[in-house]
Image (cartoon, rainbow, N blue to C red; front, side):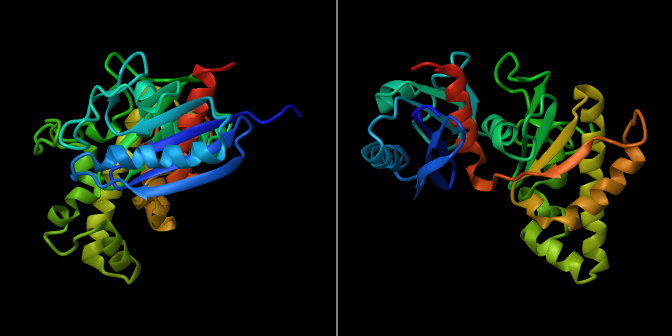
Length: 299
């Protein structure tokens, strides 16, 4: 086997900055995590630099990097061009210049999908939909082996799919969106103020709370309807569910599978495989490494 080539993967999240040193076979040699400190003037940018400097100090032969972050990435993959309301200073920041290292930049959900296709639940897949269920609802899609980015980089934002044209507009003005039907950000409203988090709602479902179950079944039914529609549009071989809500396990997968049994257009006896993500909080960093290997194959 040839000498390992080290690649740096960085996931700039709203809560933490995560860094990995990975070789081209996906083996992890080092990692570091620091708080993002979004809101403190310049702190998040300094924390990225600290993560990178610490890992470069241990592996000085690192030649390229991949970085993922929330927001829309530029067509040339040098920067995030749209991330309103968070991480002030991120928009327009050229990361190759910032890190003095050739760096490819991509959206965090796109990166998570690439990570799962490279090393995780969708390993080797060519037609894969990923949906991340957390504070909001995000996602990414791969069709015939190509990550869908779209004209402006919006492709994969499945949380802003409209399920009710008469519903309240969400943060991007989509009425009755999947994000509002399933995201942690609206669980208080959906439960009539009974639950502040989806975790608390799920805990009540497990204990047999019928009112909580009714809320949960409406939410998972909405997710099932959205997935059934997306299956018709994208024709995936599998759907990967990630994010904090997906950690509910069978409490999520059982009613969701039942919903798809009712709604999915099936060719043959079985439907599209529905699987939990495997890489957890490291998916984005792994995906950033994978994209860097594609972007800089011989650097």
